[in-house]
Length: 278
Image (cartoon, rainbow, N blue to C red):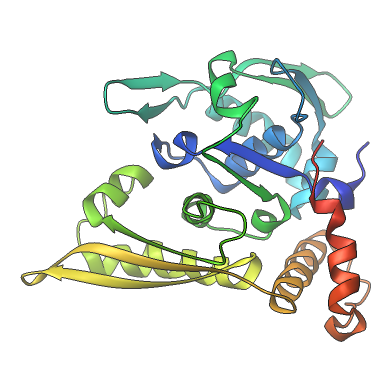
């Protein structure tokens, strides 16, 4: 069994191409499962290993009701295995699957999974052009587009010391990236995809985001996103809000520590756990 608190602080580390150039459409729990498996990778790993995951641990980690999830979990894996995804470069379009191997351990409530070896260049020995974030940032999120947006926004920071980033994206390209091209009307896309995603990111993560639509003629053709890293105490408040939301789903609320019970120095010291993963 895992240490839940420590696991929520693990780092998810991906090459930017796996975020900015990948097109896939996964459920929110499938995205959290992939992120969790990636967070188990050790910084010095040379190969993608097999990892054991207890369903009960994953439920507690994410705040998922265990009662019905044991049956759903196998379906999530099966459906994930059938969903390939694309990474488009200037010269080629690559097609991948997430897992190369999945084992169900009967009567134990656990599985063993191994990420596809073709993903090694996007996940191992990354020395530049990569994105990392603590997994707790996505655990309270309920919208599948919110996680995609969050990872995209994190990838636009070119340096860890930068506190603000700005990115303009063509609307058609954004829909293509999210596999949300079924939203033909901008107002519908904004209402159902953009606004809910930004609200969740602003509420539960270490980022705040605003967006500005850009018109060409009478039509919205581009969107500028303004992304800022939260400073203390807002960052810590978002962390507490996230953990409280997860615990609420787990039925384990034991009272919330006051934000003002912690000084900035204490918070920074406590945040040392966020430096490493695995």
